Image (tube, rainbow, N blue to C red):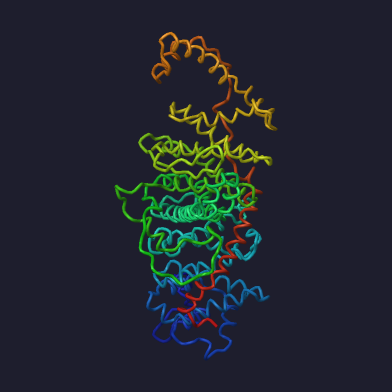
Length: 583
C-alpha cells in the first residue's frame, strides 16, 4: 500500500482531520499541468524543479491522461518544460543535468505515444534525432545511456504500426531506431537489438517495411526522372550524332547521393529479425505507377537526392488496394532496383560503401531458408527492371521485353551485371567476392532442395573469356579457367556427341529435348573430379568481420542526419508557428 501511495506522489493519505501530503516535486508537476505560468509566483520554479528527484511514474501518468484538447491548453507550459530541460543539459551541476534529462526523455516518450498533435510528435522525433546525433560517434554519446535504460522502443513501434502516424513520422522513426540499434552494439548488451530481434507483430513489421520501401522507391523514381531528362536533352542528341564515345561521362552526370540511413534500417531488420523476411515478399502496387494528387507545398531548400524523407502524400500511395491492371511489386524488388543504381558507380568511396551494404543485405537474404523459398518459388514471378550501366557494346533492353521470372533470377542478374561491368584498373575485389558468395549461397540452396532454375548462365561464365585475350587479367582469368575442371570436362565430353548427333540426323539446330536425349545417352561415360565441401559456406558474421565498416558507416550517417535536421529550417518554422511560445 505504501508503494502505491509513493507512486501517486503521496507522502500521507488523507483523513478526516488532515489533508493528503504530496511530494514537493509532485506539487510542482501539478503546477506545470495548469494553464497558468508556474514561474509567475515562483521565479526560481524551474531551477528548483531540476534539483528535485524525478517521479517518473507520476509524470508519465499525468502526460498519458491528457487528450489533444487538454494538451493544447497547457502547450505554453509544456514548451517551457522542454526549453528549460534542454537549457539545464548544458549546466555543470550533475544533479540538474540528470533530472533534466529524465524529465525530457519521459516527456518525449509519453508525447510520442499520446493521441495528440502530429506536429508535436514530429518535434519530439526531431529533438530525439538531434540528441542521438550530437556526436559523430554515437557510441560516445553519454545521453544515450539513459535512452538505453528508459527505452523509447515501444513508442517507435507504435508510430510504425499506426498508419496515420506512420505516414507523418515513419521515416524519422525508422532512422532513429537504426541509430539506436548501433549504440555500443559490440561493447555491451543493447536492449534495442534484443527487442528488435523478437518483434513479431505483423502490423509493426509491415509498417516498417512500407516506410523503407517508400524511401527506396522515391529514390528510384527520382533517379529515373533524372535519367530520362538527361536522355532527352541536348547532350543526348549530340551523342546520337557523334557516337557513344562519351557515354560513360554522360552516365556520371546523373549519379546521385544514396540514402544510407534507410539502407542501414533495412539491414538491421533483415539481419536481426527473421520475421521481417516475410515482409520482403509482401505484394503492393508498383509505387512508381500509383499516383495521388499532390497538394502545393511551400518551397524548401534543395538537398542531395535520397537524403531526405519522402513526403507524406507519397507514402500514403503505397497503402492503396491492389489493382489487377497495375504491376505488383514488393520491398525486395524495390531494393534490387535501388541496388542496381547504387552499384553502377563504385569509384567514389561513399558509393563504394553503399554498394557494399547492399551486398551485405543480399548475403543475409541468400542465407535465409525462408527467403530462398520465395526467391525460387515458380508461383511468384515478377518482371524486375534493373538499371544497367550504359556500355558501348550493348543496347539498353526495352522494359516491355522483360520476362516474368522467379525473384532469384533478378538477384543473379544483379550479381552478373556487377561482375561483367566492373573490370576496372582499381579492381573492387571485396565487392567481387561478395557477389560470388551470394551466387554460391543461392546455388547451395538449389542443390540442397533439388531446384532446377531456368536461367541463362552464359553471361556469368563469359567473364572467363579474358583468358584468351592479351590484357592485364589474362593470367588471373587463366587460373580461374583451369580451376573449372568439371565444367570444361562436361563441355569437352558432350560437345562432340551433340555435333555428331546433329550430323547423323541432318539437324541444323537441336531442340532442348534432343540435347537432353544425347546427355542421358552419354552420361555414364562422363568422368568428373570429386570436389568436397562445395555446398558448404561460412555464414555471415557482422561482429567478427564487419565491425569497422559499420562503425564508420554509422558515423557518416550520424553526421548526415544532423546536417539535414539543421537544414530543414522551413519545416521547423511551421512547427514553431503552432508552438510559438518558445522564446
